[in-house]
Length: 234
Image (cartoon, rainbow, N blue to C red; front, top):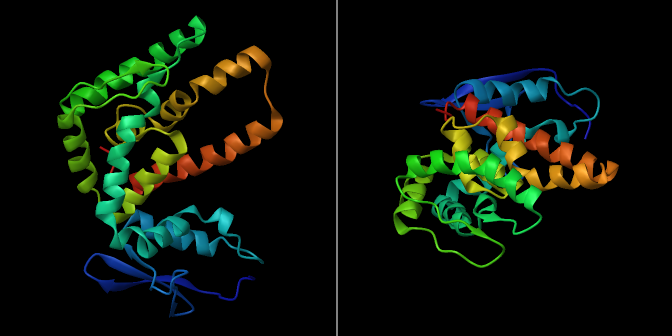
């Protein structure tokens, strides 16, 4: 779709909410809902994405708009389901299942993951169960309850960004570490890809895999930035 508008503006829609307007007309989500955004940096970022479009509109350059659509068309009406799904991630979290061999990889994982796990354990007020290999583990009920409580406290837009961070890294604990300022986005992304780094050290870089890696990393950065714009990162 080619750019069909000249003016992009944010108009008050309700207390603390702005409506995105193109030439005075409200923008709608794919499901037909009016694109209403929390007033502040995130809404400004969405508007800037629309202003930056030239010629053809490229959704691939509009991560904040995509996130807003996700919230309004999906998460807004099923927040409890999303929170439950994210809480369940802790049972299969990347950081909880270390390698058994080779020893060099085991040491890389322990060195990178253990300090993060210790800090997150303190935040959640319960020990985090870990294992080597693929044998299933069960997390402490106190940890799961506190995690659920933390996630339930996120409003829809922040929860959507958090969900994207979790799915991109395979770790709700890493996403929580970013949310609480334990690690920054670079440290979190590197922690999620210790295995890939080890493989690259052994066999070199696969160009196709690296290109996909960079696309996903850009999406992760956008999700973290969204949390910052929404004032969710402590």
